[in-house]
Length: 158
Image (cartoon, rainbow, N blue to C red; front, top):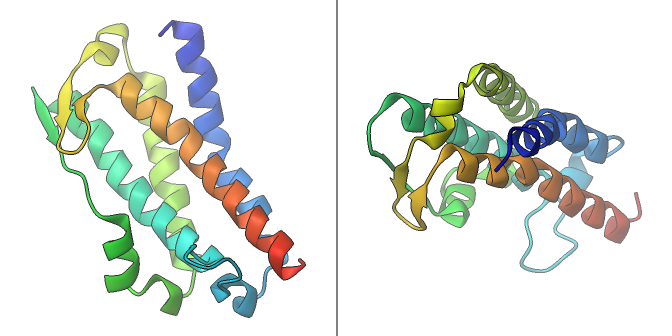
């Protein structure tokens, strides 16, 4: 991956929170918890997932940078949603956690040196894992979920 490629992905990562908040504008509490698409998360569940995922991602990147041969542990996102009762909780604190984790991680990303990008770890579910692997995943993650929220909006007519 070139430096320009990384910068483009970091810029996309930086826009992820705003993309999600734009997708949520105008949704009321009933809309947030609605399940208009069978077997898909509600908007509230997506927001809580983004908060938990972003906090996990922040630690993953830091582990890659601070530990030699870091082991990155996977987790079951559906178990998180069920056991942490995503659809029963208000979304404001989760949005703030998502925003704050992303903002502090942007500071880390923008301060990385060339040799930081070559560090390697091992993900328990997907194998070899590098900061570039991390960046590819999380630059798209919030945007993908914002699109999912927009699909929910269309189905409920908002």
